[in-house]
Length: 273
Image (cartoon, helix red, strand yellow):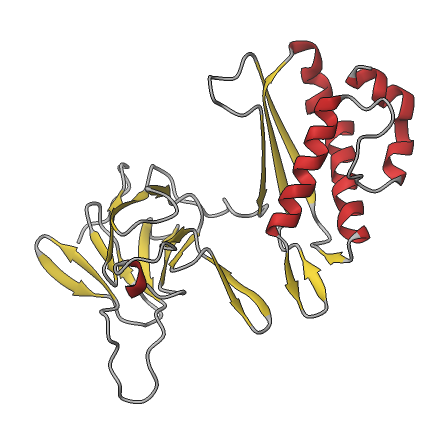
């Protein structure tokens, strides 16, 4: 049974049942794979807070590559994404999981053959407003010292967090998610704090600013490892903990403890010193 035949046969009745762990009667295999991939991603990205689990994201993004031309209209149509959206909501409710009321599913599809080794299906959990206030240009952080979860990351969000682990938990649950994380247990990475620093893009000023989030020891005891600083034009500039932060310039070498990244920004929007 094709996707078109399946939706025509079951129609609105599909909205009444929760996301199933096994295929429905006559369900096309690609549809079953998409549904189960969404379920797996929601399980992966949820966490326990008190007596219940929480899925904090309000957007599930589904990317389909190598779609057949005759199926493109089905995958990108309004009914299909509404169907997946309802499936996701039903699955979360059925599992007793809290989630944002404005949760939605976004489907993107491309026609043609996928590249060698490229997955045909990618599911991501994100925030609907993660690109609001994002900066123009191709700003990024390139890792020079310390193994991280990525060799480089684009500064595509208004705020980018840097720390020791991806997810930072406290007694109340998930407290913060780091975009760049130095998780591997090495001497360099052990100098990075769980909540070490963050970078904000100031759209009004057209600049990036670096903030030091590293928690200081109690009392007068000084930290055993250095905190956060920038090497620029051969000079070292310490980043103190304050509300203003330090403006970044292309080529800045940023030190998070002993871990080092370089700030790169290929754009004409640069501020004078």
